[in-house]
Each structure stands twice: as C-alpha cells, then as structure tokens.
Length: 178
Image 1 (cartoon, rainbow, N blue to C red):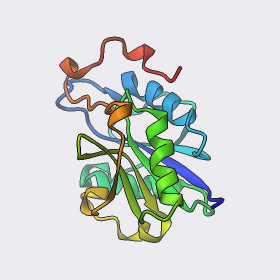
Image 2: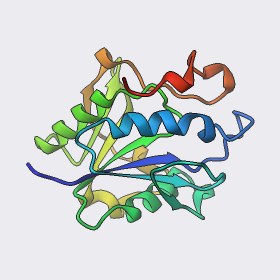
Image 3: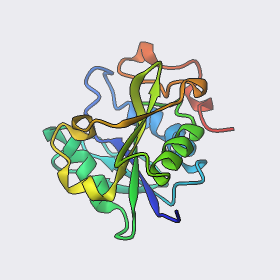
Image 4: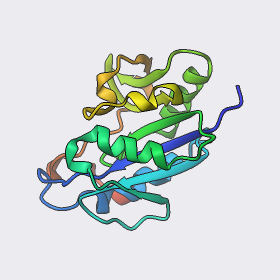
C-alpha cells in the first residue's frame, strides 16, 4: 500500500507538573526520532500553552485547554489533504524508537485496523496511527477514546513519559536517533 502518512507531535500542554515548558527541552529529540522514521512524509508540531523553537511545521491550537483531542484535531487539520493516516506522538516521550513508528505504520498499511498503537508490556502506548477515516470522530479526550489494535514494541523500549523533572532520562540532548 502506497500511502501518505503524516506525524502529529502533541506539544500544546501547559507542563504544570513539570514546572516549566518541558516541550522546549524534549521536543527536538522527539522530532529527530520521528524524522528518522522512513514511513513519515510530513511532521506537524501542535503548540498551545507555550511557543517552542522547532524546524518542523507548527500548528497553533487556541483551544488546547479543552484537552488532548482539541490539540489532536488541530494537528490533523494541518496535515496535507492527501494524508491517509497520522502517526500521533507525544512531545514528552524523548526515548521514542523510530522503529516503533515503522512497526505501527506497517501494521496499519497491512490492514490491522483504523487505530493501531504500540504496546509495551501489554500496555497501550505511543506511537498511535489514526486512519483518516476516523479523524472527524476525535473527541476532546483524544485518541484514548478509541480501542486500538496493539502492536507489541517491548523489544524497542517505551518512549518515556516525562511529567516531572525526575522523569527525565539521563541525557535528553542525546535522545536523538543514532
């Protein structure tokens, strides 16, 4: 299947638990990792509470406070009209494996389902692939509202979830893809 796949990096939150705009610290390694996934044609970073410096295309979500679904809808709307699916990743997952993106996109292309997510230890995680056919159905709670087909990515390591400074991996600046 030859399909156009965009990536939506969600970076719109207030980072209140972190104490400062964690996106400014974590976004660059996440974008580098998404870029190194060969199945992604375009990247859109969704910002809201804070501005960030990035060389990726930015979509500003004025409704970011409504929840992750509002930010996700902004990012999806910013993708090219020809995009068949979107890979959704979080800006606070600096250890995201590009191979996890490849794995979930390949599963989607192979017909696994309209919502396909990486799993780690049997627990749903990121990245998540959303088929264009469901984009109009995104509620304010975001893609969490959908039951995905889970694709095991245990061997790749979880992407991380930085909520507080203590969650930071050793050297975030080195978290880019090799």
